[in-house]
Length: 482
Ligand SMILES: [Zn+2]
Image (cartoon, rainbow, N blue to C red; front, side, top):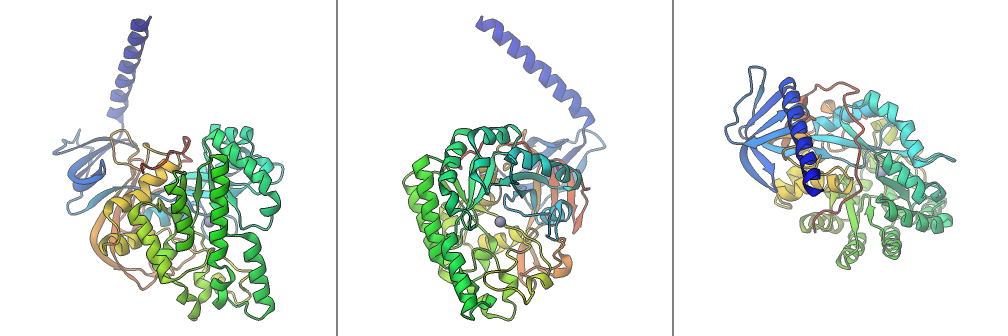
């Protein structure tokens, strides 16, 4: 019966090809001409044909289909896959919703963002996703992935995680730093088994809850509670211990883990030792740990720089850049949390109670490019890996996203490697209204951003409309090639 099955398959493929040809005629076409296109792991001079939402052809001297084709001159520009930021917080009490967060992202060359939502008591992760979906569909311009935050491991069983994956999202996040983590640790070990069985990737915030809680409370009681002492209130030891424990739990259960916003050399060495043992331990770091050190807390505005974990030493910063260069740090993501400058400088805050996180979506890629690629710390290949192709794989989007290839989504950034601009508060699209990096001169900026075939950012203006972004259906995670 094999010949019959082959015949059916061939007939089916012919029908699909015919359907593609028919829709192709009615869909808009863009040709990006003469850019240095990052495809197949390297740059080459080529044209890119976009038809509808997807990349249709990559080659030299492509001919326009008809008079309606939009031609974009990319001479002197890099053509890169759109950035994928899997660590973004939007909505709630924060100053960015999906619309303003999208604007900041698209102006910064990021075409896929994320959000997190807490699994409420008595709810399943899939129900949390369903509750979040209407806002995403109404507000977003960028494409979106969603991570339920699991506080009660009883809500994350093999059954409920399978339902989440069926609903198209394949990650959950767990905060080891929350005071409730330790008493529920046995439950979380069960959740790790469930994650392994269902292909769901666990994102873990690794700081030891007891050390952080008691250290910061005692410092407040002793009169050392001001934010100037923030780095001491959350010591590297707390991050190292939690990272080691997360790795041990992953090893014992055979479950891959994704460590969010790793900040210190000692925690990185724990993750690298696990990787050397062949464990699927993936590491994310965050721009503040690559561009800033704890001296910022000694200045007049320590509140602006508060994020968890805190800023560290120059040696930590150097180790993280080196980890990106060597491939032991897999993703750079913002942990974008938009507060106003006034909120961040609220004098009522201390090392135990404060607003953590800052706005970063618009300048993450330019600063990584400028300090990383231009300054020779990392290659362009690594830049694309940690901002696009690795997150695409780890978050179940590859090869639909994270690569410039025929058939992939046309999420593209036209990047001017030579443009030098000074970061200014008044140019920020985030509702936070400022950047902690204002005043910095940065070389390498996006000129134009395309999300699924639509030009959504051009010459300083965001063109996409709220509601055009999609909640993207995801596959189970895949490891980056090691
Ligand atoms: Zn976060």
